[in-house]
Amino acid sequence: MEFLVFGEDWGRHPSSSQHLLQAIGEHYEVHWVNSIGLRQPSLNFKDLLRIGEKLMAAGKADTSCQPAQESPEATSMTKPTSIIKPLVWPMAQHPLARQLNSLLLKRQVSAKHSQRVVWAALPSAVDYLDICDSDLVIYYCGDDFSALAGVDHQLAADAERRLVARADIIFACSPALHAKFPADKTVLLPHGVHLSQFANATACPVDIDPDKPSIGFYGSLNNWLDQSLIVSLAKARPNINFYFIGREDSDIASLRQHPNITLLPAKPHHQLPQYLQHWTMAILPFVDNEQIRACNPLKMREYLAAGCPVISSPFPATAPYRDLITTASSEAEWLATIDHYCQWTPQQRSNHAELAYLAVSKESWSFRATQAIDVIKQKLAN
Image (cartoon, rainbow, N blue to C red; front, side, top):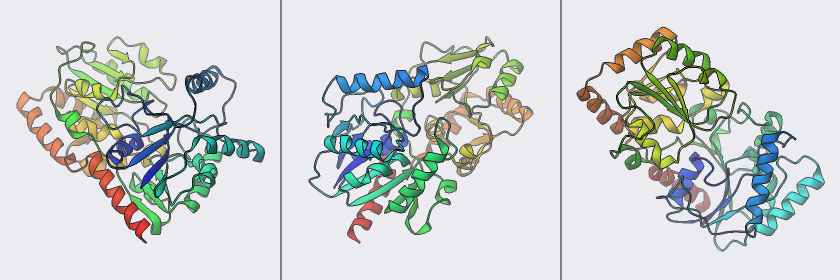
């Protein structure tokens, strides 16, 4: 059995598909197709820069299957057998453009030599299924693409409908997403966590102050962050340092105006435990929208595996951990919980860390991969 995966660019950020396929890749060949996009490019600086990156990556070597290179995001994890760098126009709508895209990608996909499972983590992969010579098609749904920021929602929704019809199995990462799809072929597959990576003790990084209480968040700094809440909390607690680590994917000018808010660039995934283990607490300060109600953040289980106390806006994915994650619906509740965690003794933190680790101890990415493989094998056998 071999896997042909349509995902984001390998190593660009640590997605759930990357974590799962790294675990699956310990036993099977994995051929990874870099991002084919979820929206049509426009003539703005960001899109032109992205197109340039794609062309430069393709120009460095033949764009057919290349051996996977070492990535700072995955220095200790299994890498794909090969990485395919497609030169296709994202979300092409004209029939001729779609046909050209398919012809170009078909030249890059090698012939299969065992049962081939297509793992489509992007709805736009539906336009390429006919060239994949697949024995099984999986739609891995990790987000509500009809509400996801930075996506052509109408085009993505149409592509998703077509992919759902073609898929043999649909893996959904949250109950809200699971409920969207046909029950007879949809399987709930929650996210996992690299347990040892986040639980093993690490040194304090040099860019945080260990002598002051701290609150931290890492991930995309996007429009799903409740910036007004964050600013209010920072103003109300000027003696606490707030750290935000991640790529700036929206206007976050309001966060720059406060001396106790520090914005740090995105860090390689294996460095994140250093921050979690030395923050006083970690937060999930999200706005309430359809995307957040359907999400199942990777960082939530990572926060718990590291033993860091967590405060979150209320959304469904926190429910299984309600004894360990404190949800806050108002600024007063946020501030009360912040003050509570700031007063914890080392023993209280140690006790919490043990319970938090125990809560996710059976949710490793290896275990999730095994669950997925069992479903796949049963389907292939039938």
